[in-house]
Image (tube, rainbow, N blue to C red; front, side, top):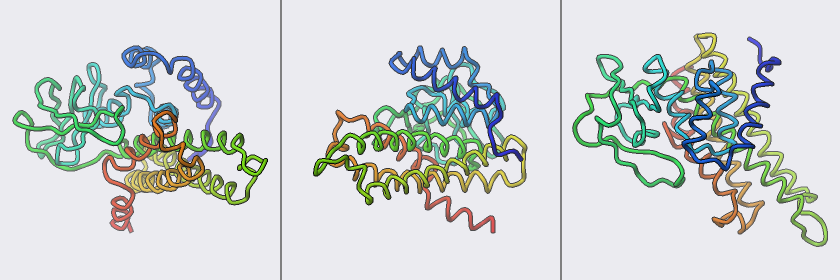
Length: 288
């Protein structure tokens, strides 16, 4: 199992970064069309993880994550338009359920794909106002069962890692220019320690997320455990990054005018969706 990117994967990573940098101000619909044109939705697991990490770094507003990691692993195909999946048995807190063209439902009899227009989805307010999360309500949905795909856990984990990377970059840039007692606060040892802790947590979570993608790509029997480990590590990572990022920014980090809050909210949402870190740490006990 090769844990290093090959030349093609590094080229993809650079291409995604450059594309997102150029197009970050474009409308959501145009972004979604661009991703489809570039073929990112068809990427295999490791390459998909590369794309998702960069989309997390950019706080992507499109339904890419739900389409590729919630709908596709259930339906075995990409949706006609955008899609999502319901696989926790509740139909609550479903990513992009309010705007999906197709919804894959995991039922006791297997997977059923229905049109989004045939289901009643009520969007709910969350800490991240740019994120679409909805409850399925009323009639129209069959009986549901639980069975979260490994790809969905991996997708949330690597997206959270991407958002945490952005928080770290913003924090490092801030402490380099913010001065106290005539010197940048980044020169203080305590500040360096907090930034280093953020970096280590991100790299740990990132390694586990890519290991999860590799096990999925190779259909390794460890894929279920790897996906659970990745989701737990990403949740633990975002909590440390959230705490240290806010502290190093000071009161400025709490303001809507500062972009730090965008990525902190996206990282926290990634932890909470499909269960926070504590849930997945407990789930790992079943694998021992």
